[in-house]
Image 1 (cartoon, rainbow, N blue to C red):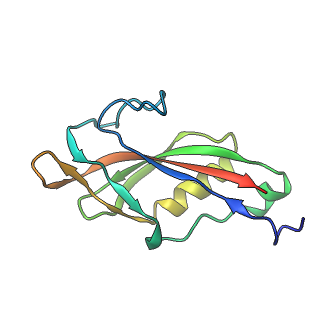
Image 2: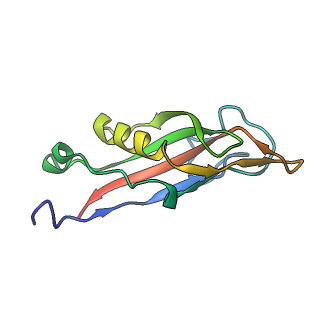
Length: 128
């Protein structure tokens, strides 16, 4: 199958981080754990999907990267980092840098006000 015909299947999961995560034991809480009414939610329509690096396609690298994004009250990413690597730094950085350009719906505190908070996003790189 030619690289142009390869399909990139992606799964992006936004984890709620006000407390322990059942689905991801390694991600227990946000870096600045706080009592949130609602976690930050990414708007995937606001940014371009990460492009699979050509050298990673050629090497048939696939994996899951978990990233942490600190989202401001304006919905913009204030900080980001790779929390758990896919095992392939180029895939990790491509996903982190692309998703850092997304807009988010900010986290909402218990009092109903938007607050700056960390949230985790998992990106799955697969080749078909």
